[in-house]
Length: 414
Ligand SMILES: [Zn+2]
Image 1 (cartoon, helix red, strand yellow):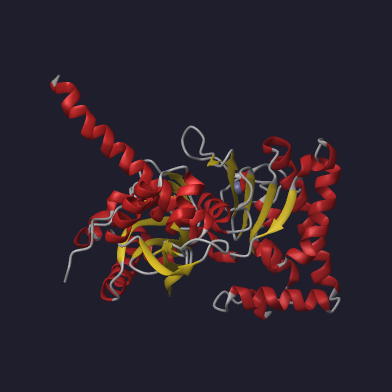
Image 2 (cartoon, rainbow, N blue to C red):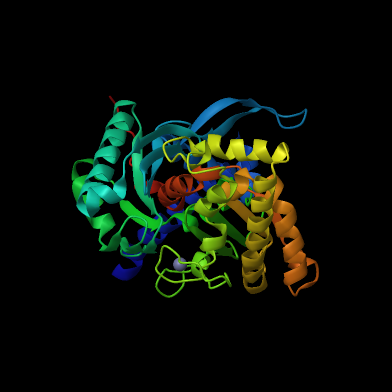
């Protein structure tokens, strides 16, 4: 008998938690609506929805807004929506020459974005991690002063990452090997009691595109991150594919370049020696002093300059875009043959130059993918650009709250 008595409340708590998650996630996916509509949409009864909404309000996760009239009859209901301030998730991006920190609220709006530039490689591993901790500490302090409550931090790294252990196995562009990054950042931020996770930047880019970008409507997508290095994130059936050790998606090092040029990883013939950002910029440059090669200048402005040169018919620029576009299509066709995604999302610099690269990519896919019409894949350009990974980091942090809203304690009065 005692087993039944103790089991019942535990079951009720589990059901309650799962229903809180259902309502909160529904408001994220479907937008603000009345309690009556939430009940109709989710199949929960109205009294239960009212009680769940009251608890979510108490925890600062939803707000009750203006009046919504459904149809022409009956009483109007107040609209319930996700809270637009208060609870935030934080993404951090560590790259060869900057540390970015971005905080998103539950509606995925940016509430904070900071960039600190530094030669991360020159700082050495200890110095670079100390800088990450300092940037994060300042951001957390700023968020705290603004009354925000941080539910988690995810660090995006251009690296092979064992995300389960928060360990960077290898980050060639940073010079890190076997770095216990999550543990070190966690220890450095012990005053803030935030949960820190670490993930590969392309994986987080894929998560962002699926959660809030151009891949929202599909559950099978490949996200290609065009940066100095090139990686991909693969989502199949709505879930990120990680592989046995977490290293899925290293397409940049697939041996696709027959000219066997030397890659940053030390091998020869890697795909990124044909499609990496450096290759594109060098191909378009008119000489060593060309401003498109100026690493201190804003990358978006430099890519705009390349778009302008292409529009003006500059032969070197057009030839480079053709060469890169065809190589991009070849690598993409390998992925499309293996994964059969509904969407192939071009991210990073590929998105910025999409209008010039896309025709070559589409043509090559149709030629090289064995399935009719390239398996129905749609080539889409990211609208998140270089911010996809960091937003994905914040999304992952927020996901903890959507999965279990009781992680956020009820607001303390005063
Ligand atoms: Zn390589």
